[in-house]
Length: 221
Image 1 (tube, rainbow, N blue to C red):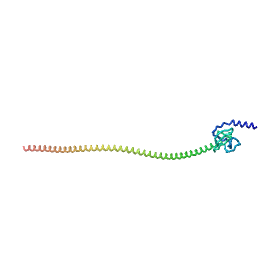
Image 2: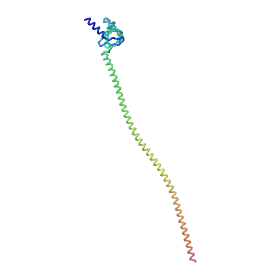
Image 3: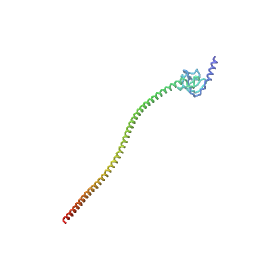
Image 4: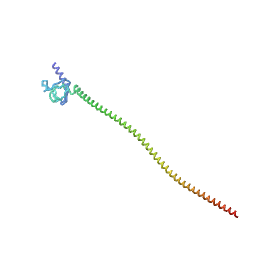
């Protein structure tokens, strides 16, 4: 029986992967293992290490490996308790750590998102105010534009009326001058007419007097 057990142990040891010096290893999924002063169970225990503990391998000797623990102590452990794969316990702990970090970051992101949402609300509010101001300014601009258009139209009408008034004034001056000219001509005509009447009266009187003198002379003959 002892021979069979020894053969089984040797077969198991031969089936174990070779561990390179300087490789980082983990204590496999067991509760605790011993770190001894030498490569045998008879050597003194210098430290107890738990599953998942990291350690660096210095060298090998048979089924033993000389390691340096995470506390800096050196000693010998059975190679069958070592593995290059991260134990499930360590993976779980790291997962929990990463998960906690992700939850913390998610909280930070949520806070940042909340801050951005609040800022976005304020921006939306400011935008609404600016749009209101823009609408007001647009309305005032349109009113001023209409007023300016009316002013331009009124200015145009004023200039047209001024031009028409100036033309009417010039026409009135012309008519006034013509009227004065016609009045002068009329006065001359009336003067000439009066002079003609007087002349005709004198001629008529002269002729009548002459005719009367002739008749008188005839009566004395």
